[in-house]
Length: 502
Image (cartoon, rainbow, N blue to C red; front, side):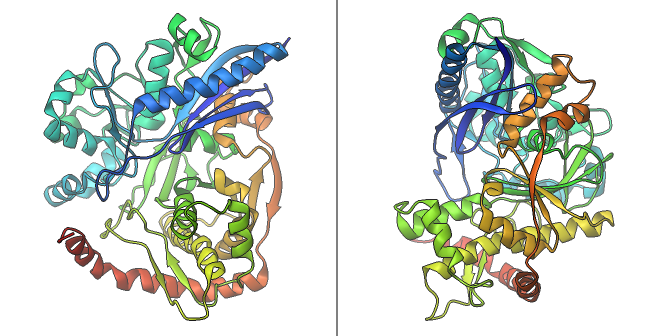
């Protein structure tokens, strides 16, 4: 009988479950998809019930195969999308049917008011993060003010993977990787900040204990065993947020290493021993105890999905779309795409919009699709330069993970835009590998997470910049930057027009 662990990734587009070998290989994987709910411009929600239903379906598939092949499940670890703010009552039931996600912007006024009333340096040094609508702290203020009945019934605030863990074990906790990006944790102590809670008027008794990702949260209950097929009593780890766990699962777990995680969003990260305090840089705790300084583009893979839906009503598959994009020349004949479909997380204009710039009669669908891929690359490169200026370092390479690491054309485009090689993990499901890596420490098979990652993570290949493409993109990057800068005065006008007669 072979030992395995079960990894669970509660994402924005789907929940994936996998049986994992001790050396980090995916033995079998299953997924269930769900949609985002967009009740108003700038809002984005999902139902926690959908996450649990998807987890149950995916886990039933995985556990059925494990039983058929005689695999022994030793532990379960989950990671999940960040900032999705779940309110649960004393019975563990959500007090709202749908909850705001990481890319929800409804709290923008709360953030602006905070910024107008407070010294950024003071709070930046405490939380290690500038204020942004993504942070659960501001979502909780909005929920308190706009749904007081749900807030009153709430006993605990959880993140998406924490809610699934609650359904599995009946236990409530939040790990430090999620807590570090709540705008409620004191970065120096790793505890909830009484000062910040008082400043925002939030009840700290509703926050769960902060625990380490490798700790055992509890065990699979009888009810969860029936729903998922997992053996009753299987240990369930506290787990972590999807992005830092994917960093671990791509091998990026030591200071000085750099990563690009391309999924629904696109995040560029530098690992450091301490947070980097800068108003345009966010910091997340990493599972091994470092800090990941990062800048996030909210529409990464979402930009490609939007183009497929908008141009083809989802009728073309992604292979056909990539073939179209590949038939256009590098630079898309001077067509630019700014990929800010849901705005920007930081900066003076969080209400940025997407646009094509430079359309001409000679452009066709192939140019449009390639421009979308290139536009994401230009936007991420702009973020990468901000990181390098703040840290004074230039990583020699980036490790790519997430769904974008499977797209060969996109990797070649980004390597040329970034002007440096991109390393590709052998196993693209880095979140799942990261969960398996957590289990290796919890089960006592490794002393620490870097040691575990050395056994579970392998890099399969390196994508080097094409010199001709790199020259073309180096000429285009300053133009992209100027288009972005000169468009900013128009975003407030677009907001006013969007609120006008329909």
